[in-house]
View 1: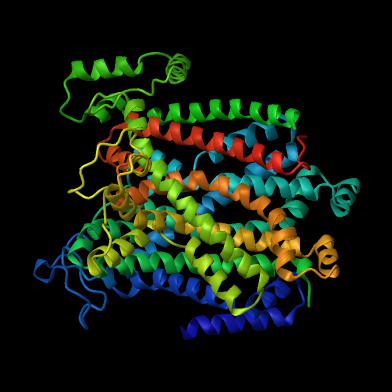
View 2 (view 1 turned 60 degrees about the vertical axis):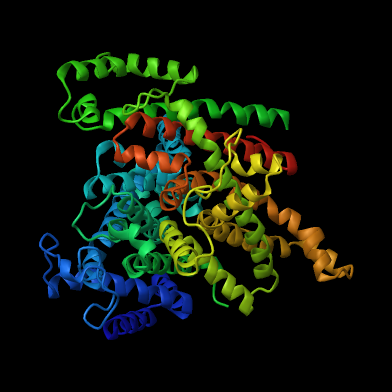
Length: 300
Length: 334
């Protein structure tokens, strides 16, 4: 954790130096305890995801110890063992990379595709706008979780298909956000000025409109990752995501949840707690970012 | 109002058509030959050809879609590939269980979420507010299948006070007339069955209510704070009204309008969340059915249920918008 605190302090110092909008936003962000809590949780999970595979070898295919099935938490197995006698803590740590990686990469795809579509719709307007936004309305007519489940049920279970489904259901929100940002920005004086100075449409979009619509997109990305972790876990829980024996939080719950009647609470408690804690971290951070990136709140 | 109602209602038609195109395309998302995938490796070529012909997979796409929409309009959602039953019949038979669960969840979410949101707004920045906000944020971060498992484990296994699955105890003999067990039991005056059904409903409803409850509480807080900063509230306060009167009589009703929209939007989340909740609690609604059908590769059921749920969501959103326009005369269609 020392590294996290150090990184945060370093960045704060960097924010102090220049009075740039980014620096201001960062100062507002770390001033709030909610944001600091979110940052610490998110940083901790990201660190676990990055470090675990480097410092610990794990082969899910050979991991089994039937002599130690369903052992409650002890010193040797702090989170207990599952139905195959596998150490839950070890699998949880390795699952972090899978679960978080799935969520982050699907949101990255959705953010790029969705905002590009939205910028196009808002900039070109007319038929392009109509058609694109109609497609988004169709996607939004489905509850996101249902659409993701149905798509993976059709194309087949697995991580890559989950990635596709979660990206697809996350696209509409970006398209809508970036489109409304373009529509609002194109009426602003500085955009009109850039256009009347002879700036080409493409240049104005890329150098004025896109950078200025980033704040809401950044906030949305944080919140989308929280949502994507939940979606990924739900798919894994239904047996549609990562396939056994790959460790993934939702799949770990699915492996052994039926044993809850025997009182083996640790098999589902820890994977679920990891899901909730990471989602909470991203939600806290997203909420705090929204406040920090809103310049209208100003300095009080 | 009438103009708005007509125009808003008409927007539903293209959306439903688009939804049907998407659901229709599901079958073509199946990699390889859908008929072969459905029947498995050991299917005879004759059987595969029969299923292909039955699904119309040998025709051009636009014809396939036309046939699909034609059937849907006549209430034909296809037949279960595994059991051969019409999808719509099974769907309607199982739907009441889901409606019962979702209704209990949304009632719970409203009954707890609005008071929590009001308390949070009225005592802004107090300890009540902080706790309520933290709780709401935890609620929206909750994997509901995990919460359901924890509830089932704690109340069902550890304390042994509540059942952890099904709608009625195995010893309870009851022949419901409509499949709305609670409604039927109440109408028939069968109190032991009613009590048993309610006991079975508590945990799944609690799990399913978590996220809507948190969202409603947050929305109520934000909306009430916004209304409380308006001029007419200052006037009401200046008249010397008590804070209770200002909040309850002047602010709350206006603040609840956006909450109404949020409640409408929750219906989709409830129906999707039912897949997870029903799986945990063996609740025999459409959610559990979809889960079982995915495992059995019964694509027709997944397709039919998706279309059904999406259509409900579209219609509920329409109803919410119309209701909103009815209670708020400022809404105009542009």
